Image (cartoon, rainbow, N blue to C red; front, side, top):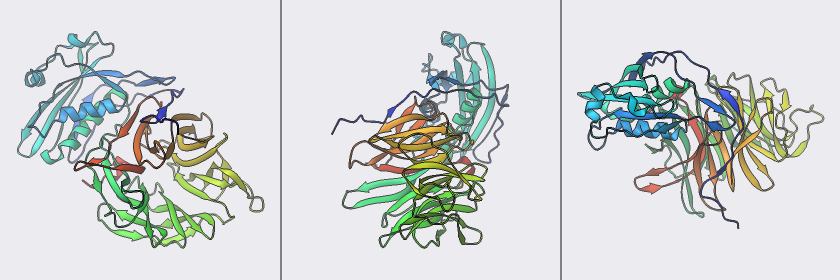
Amino acid sequence: MPHRSKKPRFFMAKILFSVVLCSALSINHATPSASVGGKSPLALTVRKGVVSKIPVAFLGFQTLGSDIDIGAVVENDLRLSGSFSILPNYSMGQREQEALSTPNLLLWQSYPGAMVVQGNITTNGSTISVELKIYDATLNKLLKTGTIYASTSQWRSLAHLISNAIYYELTGEKGIFDTQIVFIAQSGTALKPVARVAIIDQDGYNLRFLTSGDEYCDSPRTSLVSPNIAYSFLNKRRYMLRMHNLATEQKTVLPIKGIGISAEFAPNGRDVLLSDSFNGSTTLSVYDMSTGQTRQLNRSYGGIAVSPSYAPDGQSFVVSSDQDLGGSTETKRRIGAPKLYIVQNNGAARLLSKGTGSYLSPCWSPDGKYIAFVKRSKGNYYIGVMNTDGSGERMLASDHMIDYPSWAPNSRMLIFCAQQRRFSPYSLFIVDLTGRSLRKLPVQSGGSSYGGKHPSWRSYKAKAIP
């Protein structure tokens, strides 16, 4: 077998867009909370796959003992985003003084477009408060100032909110640093695999298992507007679907007659679109959580339609099918390699993908502009994106096996799972929309490492658990 690289190969996507300038940031959380005011944010521009990274220096952010280092978390967040380059701190050893005084911005003017972020951390009982200042070194002036605070026990959440504030002010886009990822954590052996539903912070910290490992679980999906997730589990050699409310811990098995796979929450937070495999055919059905009733969307023609993903408006969805969903009832036929179709809620469908090969695991971006997918062509697997009319198809990464792309809430990054060689465990990878920033998400807890499969990015809108 040919040698495989240690991480998926990635390609330079040729795109042209610029972030629209947004209004000044105003965050009002209960806990943690923040308020930052000032003029309009800068724009992060990406042209032809070349990212103009914003140079940033960090001052202050004094540590609170050996276990609390807010500045290190913020720096790590922004570095991993792929949008920033971290500049040297020319005054290490004077961090407390730096946090209380105006820095000498001339030290960073040799870096074009350099920003300086200063944090003054204070404590009051069980509360941490951070006075945040953002300077433009080139203009030699203060751009933003504000305060963000949280309880000491939530210091990592506080750090992620600071990262979000900085990211927004300097790019005009929402940050995703306080988000989480639900996935399948793999352990055990090939003969006795253990697959548990787990949740982890986007930076790889705070791994928590949601199932015990007594049953084999698969394909978790998250709701954008509620604390619900849905996943498949193996029960007496039959896959079934379970709903799990992360806020109440209530669990419900969905009433389906066949093999339940590929659950997808509708934007309304009430309906669940799913694939139900029965008698050699797979149909699409909608489960209404308010009534507990299931209705079938399409008739069975012997084809396989799986991995549905809703458009943000909830009026249509994209699905992978080896059946011509666009044909009439009489002419529907198997087409061989699966293609992507856009299906309206009334059942009308149109072909989306235009290339050769198999198109699998589509995922509609939260901003409605793109559809991510997995492509299998000539024995290779790729992660790709296209516009919602099927144009602009481009590949971001390739490996031995790739599956299950899921968008970050700001539609700027994708997480997916990849197998780097046959029989090896899957790992989680995050790639940005340009294809130039790619990183592996470590899955570790208590000194043990786990494989990662079937990720689903959890939106900040659905934040309802610690």
